[in-house]
Image 1 (cartoon, rainbow, N blue to C red):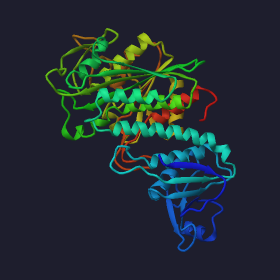
Image 2 (image 1 turned 90 degrees about the vertical axis):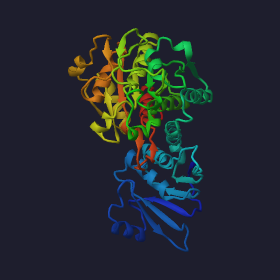
Image 3 (image 1 turned 120 degrees about the vertical axis):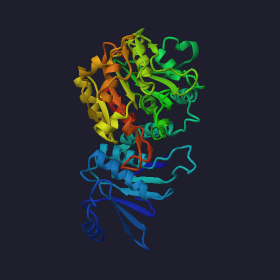
Amino acid sequence: MFTIRLTDVSDDSPTRVLPVGPGLDPEMSALVAATEGADTAGRITVFPRPLRQPSRVLLAGVGTGDEAAWRAAGAAIVREAGDDEILEALLPADLAPSALRGLAEGLWLGGYRYRDAVKAPRSGEVRLVLDDPSAYAESLAAATVTAEATWLARDLTNAPSSVKNPEWFAGQIVAEAARRPGLTVTVRAGDELERFGGLLAVGGGSVSPPRFVEMSWQPPGATTHVVLVGKGITFDTGGISIKPRDSMKLMKKDMGGAAAVVAATLGAADLNLPVRITTLVPLAENAIGGAAFRPGDVITHYDGSTTENTNSDAEGRLVLADALAYAAAELSPDLVIDLATLTGANAVALGKRTAALISPDEELVTALTAAGEAAGERMWRLPLADDYVEHQSSDIADRINAGPGPGVITAALFLRDFYGPVRWAHFDMSAPSWAEAADAELTKGATGWGARTLLYYLASLGGDTPF
């Protein structure tokens, strides 16, 4: 990531950034007055100053001045700047620490580039000029962690599936965890997966065998144990129930939930959050081959219950079922949160920017919604409606995996069978996991949706936190 630093002294730079508001000189105030919407969050008005220093001023709209508005402003600023440019941002004396955190997140997230791409990463610098820089150091440090977590989730999701098979993904998790004291990782493969019938079925048709990754963060004194589960389908052909061509183009992103929970756990370790976290990542490639599972097959899950496969393109819930059942049987968590690019119905119901949240726990819904609002990641609660349970019955197994009805809700009803008697929340974040174009802090491609929401939520469980 390019550099952001705090300073109390104005340095010479070719470009200066000023928020739209009181204190602008008469020329700039006149330009703002003549520019419709200049104060809108994320709007940049360029004020050239030939033969003067700085040579131009970027007037950044900050809207209502809340954290989200400053995040949008930061993203717009970095897009207007050149790759190696030095920017000097003069910030209000009464700027809230949360606003600076939003600004820094927006700068870094708006400037994201896939780190294995041909185009080089940005190498510029943004100097945040403040009366008392030390008062904002903690907010900048927190923004650094959330931005790095989101960058990692985006990088993992953007990686092509020709590279990103289950073995590679598991190796990335091991390598990242090794850089952080206190994190441990166990990777299961082969005979160790004997009880994970859903994972074995989904991954059986691929030349790249499945993996089951368990990452643990256990700080001393932690009183709450959170289990995070992320769907990790490294590519999804739909299996024998093959997808149409257009639906298959972006299926490298079908592990976006896994990327988010991994990144959030690494971020929690970076922040030294006093919360015990166990992260479970079932990894498989849903491919077509002689060993692929078939419609009509009966799958036995980790808890011994059975599912009749009626659609091999409803594979995500099968691997999540094993992970949820494992958590319930082996980990004794206080709560479980799963993230999955699970259904196309997510986009039909809520559009491209909003994840579906389903949970029977009112307190958990309230806390996660607040975390999402603070992080700038949209969600909307859908009901866990029992009306559709009868449609998931099977004559030869405990259930089927793809019953009729509203897809987001029926998938959640399927998962409900496995998480045990603990608090649980499910995110279907298929739609917001990918952006077709730059929008506020999003760049085209993977968004890393969920990494920031989880970090904000986990931080809230720890009491005295940087959020």
